[in-house]
Amino acid sequence: MSDNTLRVEFETTLEEIVEGHMRFTKRTRAYRRNRALAQICCGGGFAVGTATLTLLRSPGSTSKGLVLLGAGVGLGVLVGYLYGPLYEWRVRRNVRRFVAEMYHDAPAVRCEIEIGDGGVRTWQSGTEIAFEWQRSTGVEDNSDTIDLWFGTGFVSVPNRGFRSAGDRLEFLERVRRLVAGAEPATENP
Image (cartoon, rainbow, N blue to C red; front, side, top):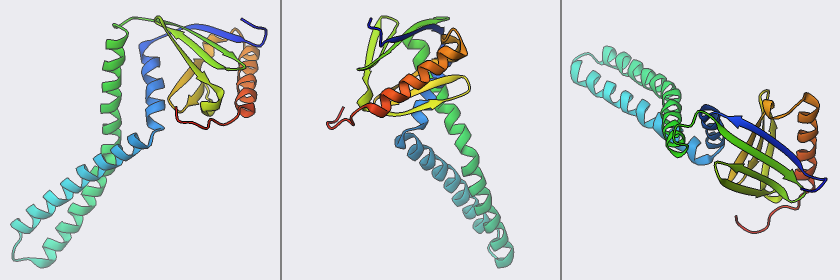
């Protein structure tokens, strides 16, 4: 390990891994598109079903039918809007199952993260992953984590991984300098 390397070690829980995966997933166009499509289908299906029932139940009353039809469409929009959190809950539940299976329901997972001039290296459950700074798509300083985003993955460092607030700040500033100084990647990952 060179003098330019900073290393952080900590234990994480499966729930924290799930939360990190959800933050990563929600950043993707695929997630946002699928959530919107699910909301449109759910709300649209409700509106069409309500409209059909309205038209079948009130064939002789046009004004009453139009009011009920408008209410059905309005409720369809509401149902679609409310389906968003349900969709997220379903995705989170599936991610939780995947993570629990992948880590064999371990109560804690040991993580090591090392940042250096060339990039970030992580070790977790016998697996090493490396990200080059050129592949960075962002750095987020959250209240409880520092998240490093890359095109093909992420690294999340919880505050408890640092001995002090000063160590956390040093890590964050170093990461930001390294990301800012990296040449953009030219080829596909």
